[in-house]
Amino acid sequence: MKVSGRHYRTIWLQENDPRVVRIIDQRDLPHRFVIEDLSTVDEAARAIAEMHVRGAGLIGAAAGFGMYIAALEASGLAREPFLDALEEAGRQLRATRPTAVNLEWAVRRQLEALRAADRVETMVRIARATAQEIADEDAEHCRRIGEHGLVLIEEISRRKGGARVNVLTHCNAGWLAFVDYGTATAPIYAAHDAGIDVHVWVDETRPRNQGARLTAWELVHHGVPHTVVADNTGGHLMQHGEVDLVITGTDRTTFTGDVANKIGTYLKALAAHDNGVPFYVALPSSSFDWTMRDGVAEIPIEQREGGEVSHIRGRYEDRILDVRLTPEGSPAANFAFDVTPARLVTALITERGICDACEEGVLGLYPEQR
Ligand code: MRU
Image 1 (spheres, rainbow, N blue to C red):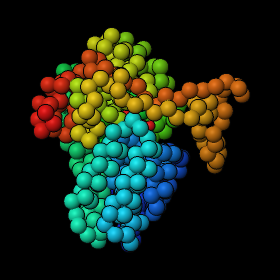
Image 2 (image 1 turned 180 degrees about the vertical axis):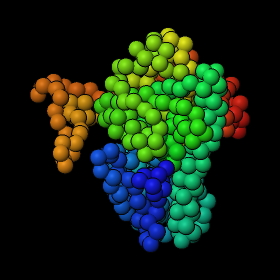
Image 3 (image 1 turned 90 degrees about the vertical axis):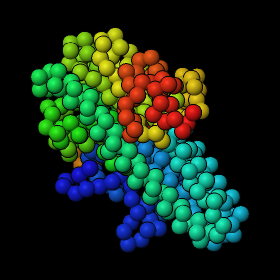
Image 4 (image 1 turned 30 degrees about the vertical axis):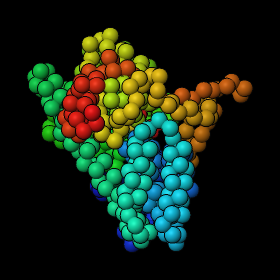
């Protein structure tokens, strides 16, 4: 994705010092574009927990690079203590955010790759290569999701005789939530680039406003027509024929098709169902949970501190400020995700193609997981 004409990924190794991982610190976007350097496991864990980086794919990539940093930190040890140190780093990284399954997937992938080697020197090389592979694969999977999702938008555009296609999305499952392209946004970018008249309704997505701050910022930079709406607007728009399809991302989807995504997604799916609006979820295979069958009962839902609800961040003149919204003394609860049952999901858009949100559909695309 380009920012002011320059191509960026959301995470990369510093060119002249590959011991340093660089990220875009998303906390101050869209007001400030800040690049941050990470060179310790503590810094990587903090960047994930405090949401300098966020979004399922990027959390996975950050965990992959975090494990590479852990390997550098432990490179003076013998093989067994080295592996113990890496296990410990994996535990530290995994504890940062419980819902996005990409995090544990990336840590597991690193540990499996490392255990296969004999010498610590080789293991450090493997950790770097694996981190880079996770990031490259994420970008490539998102690019392919764009190609598959484009077909859906093309069909609607054809049906409407070329009239504007309105997509509603929730939170930020865009370029900033992955390494590049995004998931929910990839088909939108592909459609826009193909000359289709596409417009996006962007849910603001309280409490952290990833829609209003991040998705809107991405769409501005890509030149895609869009409108930011307050979170509760979707149902009204759907009742009045203003939404042709919904596309969201996901932080964890069971192999049976239940979708955990940013809080409020379930309500959008209910409104879409009631109004006959197709509700698609876009995800790379790294966001599937191959062990959980019942998403509502089993997916861990992160609860964050209430300050994100009682306060709101914005820009005032040159300063970025958090201001209070609620009375002093009103407790606030902050459930970060909810689960949309598979029956409300029209289909899943993956890097391998589009499938029904059910066990047969998902395992049909990923037979190796049977
Ligand atoms: O809490 P976040 O910002 O890490 O949440 C992730 C999200 O942005 C959404 O839930 C998104 O739709 C899925 S992650 C691509």
